[in-house]
Image (cartoon, rainbow, N blue to C red; front, side, top):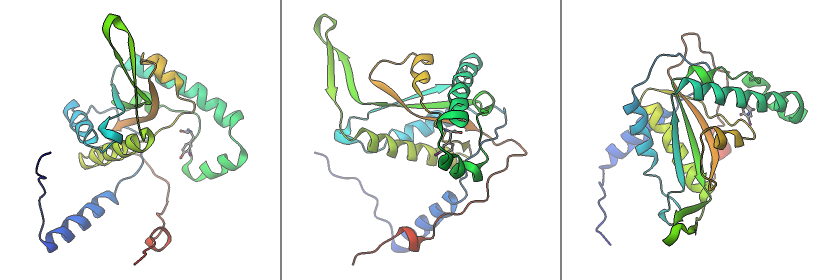
Length: 221
Ligand code: IYR
């Protein structure tokens, strides 16, 4: 065990930091229209480093971040995602789901998968996989994978926003094609596909509101 390094802030500083952070986060929007303008790779790398500070079950860090900028690979991802999404919008989605999506104005076209300079694909590792003596496969059980990867994804979106970048949390369904195109080992399952970049000059977002605190916060004192 090590002694904890913990920076205790003065009360006013705590309040200042807390509300400053809220102010910055309340400007984050999901963006679906990207500019092809390049983004320095260092920003992506640093945001992923921040994501890897997330707590995880037994500190097993059951995640892998695959960053794609190769135009041909992006094209393959777009093509495969659009094929799934076309099925979804034209056949699989129940009417109720399509109605819930109406305010977002989404459809099966996913040009942003080629236009955004980077696609970050998060994979979750449901179990660890390594090689023992004579190449024998060793599987390690992982705990709380969904919770762990969800927290890391949240930190990643926050870090990218703080770096002045726009993101989309995209979940083409199903996402099995990402394992194939990106040649991932069998213990890695696609979790989230995040296009990252600058918004296009004409990017528009749906007029949505967040629930008031009174609806989402219960205090038991
Ligand atoms: N995966 C589809 C549909 C979709 C579903 C939900 I729930 C959203 O919040 C947004 C879209 C798509 O990406 O278009």
